[in-house]
Length: 139
Length: 113
Image (cartoon, rainbow over all chains, first blue to last red):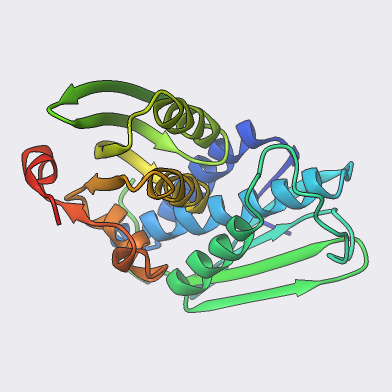
């Protein structure tokens, strides 16, 4: 199972919480201090995108963030329940610019070397990982 | 940490000082502020981002939207930013080519190109 797992309703105000938790767990897992800003930003982008997909598709359900500590990598999965991604965007509500979605993905792929974006029947999944240092972590 | 916004006039420029975090939750406030300024006839904006702790693509989208609005009135939108972690986001999205980015408010206010 995940080291830490979050589930939150698809509202913009919870994205910050996800960023803070992800950065805290990543730090503890041994992700280098210089990379924590990237982790924070990438998780924020993935969650913002998920919130946007839910809102544009008028989808219920939640966003799941799994923070998984492995021996050599720190893995983050952000899953939405906004459907298969084929929902047309009526462009209303929080995100007025459909370009923001593409911009968010551009930021993630620009930042994170190991990233995978997939889409299933229930929703999308973004998987990202970062190396962890093998040295013991000072708390 | 929330978003803080304050505006002041320097010559023919309007300086918007932004502090805190610009993300999917707070970006609409910045969007409202920029729209309001343009609607009130302020077409030369300087957005001072020195107090910004966090910026994501939603914030970038709002800044691009602001730029479109001022350009419709032959205006300008300049950014002030020295923070490497914020500049990095402009670089990876190619937006350093879109926005003039200055080291200081004085420098941004003095620029006319």
